Length: 282
Image (cartoon, rainbow, N blue to C red; front, side):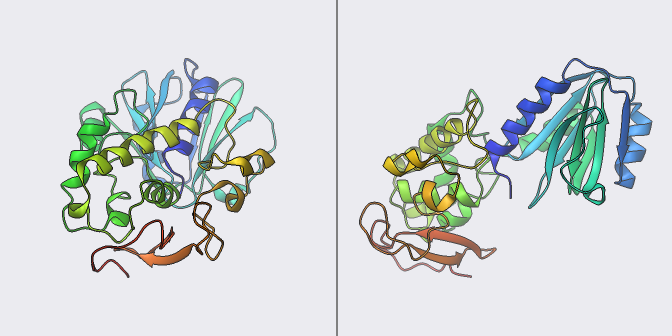
């Protein structure tokens, strides 16, 4: 599933290509969205801005209506020059927005809708603070994390109502960097550690949205990053490295399916000891 940094980069690229331009054509394979677009008269409107909040990509038009899309597990937005060949098959296309010089194409996006201002506000209010927002406050967000109580940290960090933008990759990386076992309950984490997790979340995602950042997610800052490769096995602390030695202590990294949705989780059993017996597996 695309994480907050991927959505942020997509929004930035779409904004650079489309913001301030008039929509000349709109098409969607999603029946409900097609009706909404026709009723909203999107064609002929100017696209004002493209932004992101967590994993939600938001396109605001001059009439005030916003196209909200969520990538779920495998969706993506592509940008093409007019007449340029698409890199994915037409059968994967769900939405096409055109201006005089660009096409923005959403592939395999199942969650998309046009919504007005107040309804959009309600949707955003249900989400936690956006890790990439300029006003992101690690201290205030830490309080939300600690309030999760008896829930395991592997679930809390994926809960978009706690903080918006983290996914499975950053979850494992952050817990390793903070030396917190994924199965540990939020209620057992001290305030300083909770704040550290939130601070590092913002740091890692911001590194990965810098102009020129790799399309892959990069968090490992050790010597091996000099290879310049995007293979997660070379560029991560723990994610995707099950069975390989921990970069810190040499212990074999473990992978377990943990939490409410049994998501794959990577951790070092020595660097991230579980000091309390809690139920978080499967």
